[in-house]
Length: 307
Image (tube, rainbow, N blue to C red):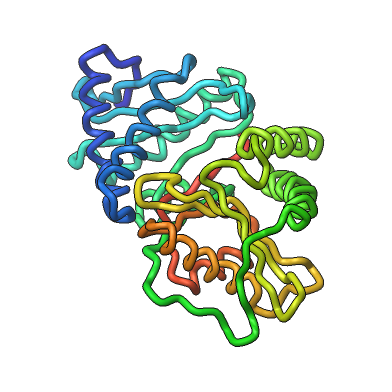
Protein backbone atom coordinates (compact mmCIF):
# COMPACT_ATOMS: atom_id res chain seq x y z
CA UNK A 1 0.00 0.00 0.00
CA UNK A 2 1.31 3.44 -0.96
CA UNK A 3 1.43 6.27 1.58
CA UNK A 4 2.62 9.88 1.37
CA UNK A 5 3.69 11.97 4.36
CA UNK A 6 5.67 15.16 4.91
CA UNK A 7 9.39 14.39 4.85
CA UNK A 8 11.59 14.83 7.89
CA UNK A 9 14.58 17.18 7.81
CA UNK A 10 17.11 14.41 7.04
CA UNK A 11 14.80 12.94 4.39
CA UNK A 12 14.45 16.35 2.76
CA UNK A 13 18.22 16.73 2.62
CA UNK A 14 18.59 13.27 1.05
CA UNK A 15 15.99 14.15 -1.55
CA UNK A 16 17.66 17.48 -2.28
CA UNK A 17 21.08 15.85 -2.75
CA UNK A 18 19.61 13.41 -5.26
CA UNK A 19 17.72 16.19 -7.05
CA UNK A 20 20.91 18.22 -7.40
CA UNK A 21 22.62 15.24 -9.01
CA UNK A 22 19.77 14.80 -11.50
CA UNK A 23 19.62 18.50 -12.31
CA UNK A 24 23.36 18.63 -12.85
CA UNK A 25 23.14 15.71 -15.28
CA UNK A 26 20.32 17.47 -17.16
CA UNK A 27 22.19 20.72 -17.63
CA UNK A 28 25.58 19.14 -18.34
CA UNK A 29 24.05 17.54 -21.44
CA UNK A 30 23.17 20.99 -22.79
CA UNK A 31 25.55 23.66 -21.51
CA UNK A 32 29.26 23.83 -22.26
CA UNK A 33 30.27 26.12 -19.38
CA UNK A 34 30.31 24.38 -15.96
CA UNK A 35 29.47 27.70 -14.30
CA UNK A 36 26.20 27.84 -16.25
CA UNK A 37 25.36 24.30 -15.14
CA UNK A 38 25.84 25.31 -11.51
CA UNK A 39 23.85 28.53 -11.97
CA UNK A 40 20.90 26.59 -13.37
CA UNK A 41 21.07 24.04 -10.57
CA UNK A 42 21.08 26.84 -8.01
CA UNK A 43 18.14 28.55 -9.75
CA UNK A 44 16.05 25.43 -9.25
CA UNK A 45 17.15 25.06 -5.65
CA UNK A 46 16.34 28.70 -4.91
CA UNK A 47 12.88 28.37 -6.46
CA UNK A 48 12.14 25.39 -4.26
CA UNK A 49 13.70 26.78 -1.07
CA UNK A 50 12.02 30.19 -1.44
CA UNK A 51 8.59 28.65 -1.95
CA UNK A 52 6.82 29.35 1.37
CA UNK A 53 3.97 26.97 0.62
CA UNK A 54 6.14 24.22 -0.83
CA UNK A 55 6.60 20.86 0.82
CA UNK A 56 8.73 17.76 0.32
CA UNK A 57 6.95 14.46 0.88
CA UNK A 58 8.30 10.99 1.56
CA UNK A 59 6.69 8.12 -0.33
CA UNK A 60 6.41 4.68 1.27
CA UNK A 61 5.16 1.36 -0.04
CA UNK A 62 4.16 -1.11 2.61
CA UNK A 63 6.05 0.92 5.18
CA UNK A 64 9.27 0.87 3.14
CA UNK A 65 10.83 4.07 1.77
CA UNK A 66 10.12 4.27 -1.97
CA UNK A 67 10.80 7.85 -3.10
CA UNK A 68 10.06 11.54 -2.78
CA UNK A 69 7.70 14.15 -4.14
CA UNK A 70 8.34 17.91 -3.97
CA UNK A 71 5.29 20.12 -4.49
CA UNK A 72 5.31 23.91 -4.64
CA UNK A 73 2.82 26.39 -3.24
CA UNK A 74 1.32 29.62 -4.56
CA UNK A 75 3.70 32.15 -6.15
CA UNK A 76 3.03 35.87 -6.75
CA UNK A 77 3.49 35.70 -10.54
CA UNK A 78 1.18 32.68 -10.97
CA UNK A 79 -1.02 32.39 -7.89
CA UNK A 80 -3.27 29.85 -9.59
CA UNK A 81 -0.45 27.36 -10.30
CA UNK A 82 1.22 24.79 -8.10
CA UNK A 83 4.49 23.29 -9.32
CA UNK A 84 5.58 19.68 -9.10
CA UNK A 85 9.28 20.34 -8.61
CA UNK A 86 10.31 16.69 -8.54
CA UNK A 87 8.95 13.17 -8.44
CA UNK A 88 11.45 10.37 -7.82
CA UNK A 89 10.95 6.67 -7.16
CA UNK A 90 13.63 4.13 -6.30
CA UNK A 91 14.32 1.79 -9.26
CA UNK A 92 12.76 -1.23 -7.58
CA UNK A 93 9.45 0.62 -7.24
CA UNK A 94 9.20 1.76 -10.85
CA UNK A 95 6.99 0.20 -13.48
CA UNK A 96 4.12 -0.59 -11.13
CA UNK A 97 1.91 2.43 -11.73
CA UNK A 98 3.08 4.30 -8.62
CA UNK A 99 4.09 7.33 -10.67
CA UNK A 100 0.53 7.82 -11.90
CA UNK A 101 -0.80 7.41 -8.36
CA UNK A 102 1.59 10.05 -7.08
CA UNK A 103 0.75 12.52 -9.85
CA UNK A 104 -2.94 12.03 -9.01
CA UNK A 105 -2.11 12.64 -5.33
CA UNK A 106 -0.18 15.81 -6.23
CA UNK A 107 -3.11 17.09 -8.31
CA UNK A 108 -5.52 16.52 -5.42
CA UNK A 109 -3.15 18.19 -2.97
CA UNK A 110 -2.64 21.17 -5.28
CA UNK A 111 -6.40 21.61 -5.69
CA UNK A 112 -6.96 21.37 -1.94
CA UNK A 113 -4.40 24.15 -1.54
CA UNK A 114 -6.43 26.41 -3.84
CA UNK A 115 -4.51 25.75 -7.04
CA UNK A 116 -6.30 25.47 -10.35
CA UNK A 117 -3.31 24.36 -12.43
CA UNK A 118 -0.41 21.96 -11.93
CA UNK A 119 2.88 22.76 -13.64
CA UNK A 120 5.93 20.59 -14.18
CA UNK A 121 9.34 21.03 -15.81
CA UNK A 122 10.43 18.00 -17.84
CA UNK A 123 13.01 16.84 -20.35
CA UNK A 124 11.23 15.30 -23.37
CA UNK A 125 12.20 11.91 -24.69
CA UNK A 126 12.09 9.91 -21.46
CA UNK A 127 9.33 7.27 -21.83
CA UNK A 128 8.20 7.53 -18.20
CA UNK A 129 8.11 11.32 -18.18
CA UNK A 130 6.32 11.40 -21.53
CA UNK A 131 3.74 8.90 -20.27
CA UNK A 132 3.05 10.91 -17.11
CA UNK A 133 3.12 14.43 -18.52
CA UNK A 134 3.13 14.23 -22.32
CA UNK A 135 -0.57 15.13 -22.45
CA UNK A 136 -0.06 18.27 -20.34
CA UNK A 137 -0.17 21.34 -22.63
CA UNK A 138 3.28 22.64 -23.53
CA UNK A 139 3.49 26.20 -22.21
CA UNK A 140 7.13 26.98 -23.06
CA UNK A 141 10.48 25.35 -23.68
CA UNK A 142 14.07 26.42 -23.19
CA UNK A 143 16.54 25.73 -26.01
CA UNK A 144 20.26 26.25 -26.58
CA UNK A 145 22.83 25.98 -29.36
CA UNK A 146 26.61 26.12 -29.49
CA UNK A 147 27.19 28.77 -32.14
CA UNK A 148 29.42 27.74 -35.04
CA UNK A 149 32.23 29.86 -36.46
CA UNK A 150 31.81 31.76 -39.70
CA UNK A 151 28.03 32.19 -39.72
CA UNK A 152 26.91 34.05 -42.85
CA UNK A 153 23.59 35.48 -44.03
CA UNK A 154 21.86 34.78 -47.33
CA UNK A 155 22.75 37.11 -50.18
CA UNK A 156 20.91 40.43 -50.04
CA UNK A 157 20.41 40.38 -46.27
CA UNK A 158 22.50 42.11 -43.59
CA UNK A 159 22.44 42.90 -39.90
CA UNK A 160 22.98 46.33 -38.36
CA UNK A 161 22.66 47.80 -34.88
CA UNK A 162 19.38 49.53 -34.05
CA UNK A 163 19.27 53.31 -34.07
CA UNK A 164 17.31 55.25 -31.41
CA UNK A 165 14.48 55.72 -33.93
CA UNK A 166 14.46 51.98 -34.66
CA UNK A 167 14.38 51.24 -30.94
CA UNK A 168 11.40 53.46 -30.13
CA UNK A 169 9.35 51.84 -32.88
CA UNK A 170 10.49 48.38 -31.88
CA UNK A 171 9.77 48.78 -28.15
CA UNK A 172 6.11 49.65 -28.59
CA UNK A 173 5.61 46.64 -30.84
CA UNK A 174 7.67 44.33 -28.60
CA UNK A 175 5.55 45.12 -25.53
CA UNK A 176 2.34 44.44 -27.43
CA UNK A 177 3.57 41.23 -29.08
CA UNK A 178 4.94 39.76 -25.84
CA UNK A 179 1.61 40.40 -24.13
CA UNK A 180 -0.18 38.65 -27.01
CA UNK A 181 2.19 35.68 -26.73
CA UNK A 182 1.54 35.32 -22.99
CA UNK A 183 -2.21 35.44 -23.58
CA UNK A 184 -2.03 32.90 -26.40
CA UNK A 185 0.05 30.56 -24.24
CA UNK A 186 -2.74 30.45 -21.66
CA UNK A 187 -0.52 31.77 -18.88
CA UNK A 188 -2.23 35.17 -18.38
CA UNK A 189 -5.38 37.11 -19.17
CA UNK A 190 -5.04 39.89 -21.79
CA UNK A 191 -5.10 42.67 -19.18
CA UNK A 192 -2.61 40.93 -16.89
CA UNK A 193 -0.39 40.07 -19.85
CA UNK A 194 -0.12 43.67 -21.03
CA UNK A 195 0.67 44.95 -17.54
CA UNK A 196 3.26 42.21 -17.08
CA UNK A 197 4.85 42.95 -20.45
CA UNK A 198 5.19 46.66 -19.67
CA UNK A 199 6.68 45.88 -16.25
CA UNK A 200 9.13 43.29 -17.58
CA UNK A 201 10.40 45.51 -20.38
CA UNK A 202 10.85 48.40 -17.94
CA UNK A 203 12.75 46.18 -15.52
CA UNK A 204 14.97 44.63 -18.18
CA UNK A 205 15.71 47.86 -20.04
CA UNK A 206 16.08 50.63 -17.44
CA UNK A 207 18.26 52.63 -19.85
CA UNK A 208 16.41 51.75 -23.02
CA UNK A 209 18.66 51.16 -26.01
CA UNK A 210 21.75 51.71 -23.84
CA UNK A 211 20.82 49.21 -21.13
CA UNK A 212 24.05 47.38 -20.15
CA UNK A 213 24.56 43.94 -21.65
CA UNK A 214 21.71 44.22 -24.12
CA UNK A 215 22.13 44.38 -27.90
CA UNK A 216 19.51 45.21 -30.52
CA UNK A 217 19.88 44.35 -34.19
CA UNK A 218 17.91 44.96 -37.35
CA UNK A 219 17.87 42.62 -40.33
CA UNK A 220 17.78 44.54 -43.57
CA UNK A 221 16.93 43.64 -47.15
CA UNK A 222 18.40 46.51 -49.11
CA UNK A 223 17.39 49.63 -47.20
CA UNK A 224 14.29 48.05 -45.62
CA UNK A 225 14.17 46.66 -42.07
CA UNK A 226 12.51 43.23 -42.29
CA UNK A 227 13.26 41.78 -38.85
CA UNK A 228 14.80 42.41 -35.44
CA UNK A 229 16.52 40.49 -32.67
CA UNK A 230 17.10 41.44 -29.03
CA UNK A 231 19.99 39.76 -27.22
CA UNK A 232 21.57 39.86 -23.81
CA UNK A 233 25.22 38.86 -23.84
CA UNK A 234 26.65 37.08 -20.81
CA UNK A 235 23.15 36.22 -19.62
CA UNK A 236 24.73 33.08 -18.16
CA UNK A 237 28.45 32.31 -18.16
CA UNK A 238 29.48 31.86 -21.79
CA UNK A 239 25.90 32.20 -23.01
CA UNK A 240 23.93 34.95 -24.75
CA UNK A 241 20.14 34.87 -24.62
CA UNK A 242 17.46 35.80 -27.15
CA UNK A 243 14.88 38.01 -25.47
CA UNK A 244 12.97 38.62 -28.67
CA UNK A 245 13.05 37.95 -32.40
CA UNK A 246 10.43 39.54 -34.61
CA UNK A 247 9.51 39.74 -38.27
CA UNK A 248 6.81 42.12 -39.44
CA UNK A 249 3.72 40.16 -40.59
CA UNK A 250 4.04 41.61 -44.08
CA UNK A 251 7.51 40.07 -44.40
CA UNK A 252 6.90 36.62 -42.90
CA UNK A 253 7.47 33.41 -44.80
CA UNK A 254 10.59 34.68 -46.57
CA UNK A 255 13.32 33.37 -44.27
CA UNK A 256 13.82 36.62 -42.37
CA UNK A 257 13.27 34.97 -38.98
CA UNK A 258 16.08 32.54 -39.79
CA UNK A 259 18.25 35.48 -40.87
CA UNK A 260 17.55 37.26 -37.56
CA UNK A 261 18.70 34.19 -35.65
CA UNK A 262 21.87 34.02 -37.75
CA UNK A 263 22.54 37.67 -36.92
CA UNK A 264 22.12 36.68 -33.27
CA UNK A 265 24.64 33.87 -33.66
CA UNK A 266 27.13 36.24 -35.28
CA UNK A 267 26.68 38.76 -32.46
CA UNK A 268 27.00 36.02 -29.84
CA UNK A 269 30.34 34.87 -31.22
CA UNK A 270 31.56 38.48 -31.54
CA UNK A 271 30.68 39.08 -27.88
CA UNK A 272 32.79 36.09 -26.85
CA UNK A 273 29.94 33.77 -25.82
CA UNK A 274 29.97 30.15 -26.99
CA UNK A 275 26.24 29.43 -26.81
CA UNK A 276 22.95 31.12 -27.61
CA UNK A 277 19.86 30.26 -25.58
CA UNK A 278 16.19 31.13 -25.88
CA UNK A 279 12.70 30.50 -24.55
CA UNK A 280 9.82 29.79 -26.92
CA UNK A 281 6.12 29.57 -26.07
CA UNK A 282 4.63 26.15 -26.64
CA UNK A 283 1.86 27.31 -28.95
CA UNK A 284 4.37 28.95 -31.32
CA UNK A 285 4.92 25.94 -33.57
CA UNK A 286 6.38 28.06 -36.39
CA UNK A 287 9.16 29.36 -34.16
CA UNK A 288 9.78 25.93 -32.65
CA UNK A 289 10.21 24.41 -36.12
CA UNK A 290 12.64 27.20 -37.02
CA UNK A 291 14.79 26.60 -33.95
CA UNK A 292 14.72 22.85 -34.52
CA UNK A 293 15.90 23.37 -38.10
CA UNK A 294 18.73 25.61 -36.91
CA UNK A 295 20.00 22.91 -34.53
CA UNK A 296 18.79 24.22 -31.19
CA UNK A 297 18.54 21.60 -28.45
CA UNK A 298 15.67 21.41 -25.96
CA UNK A 299 17.00 21.93 -22.44
CA UNK A 300 13.66 21.49 -20.67
CA UNK A 301 9.94 22.02 -21.18
CA UNK A 302 7.39 23.73 -18.97
CA UNK A 303 4.07 21.91 -19.09
CA UNK A 304 0.93 22.71 -17.11
CA UNK A 305 -2.59 21.31 -16.99
CA UNK A 306 -5.71 22.79 -15.44
CA UNK A 307 -7.03 20.86 -12.46
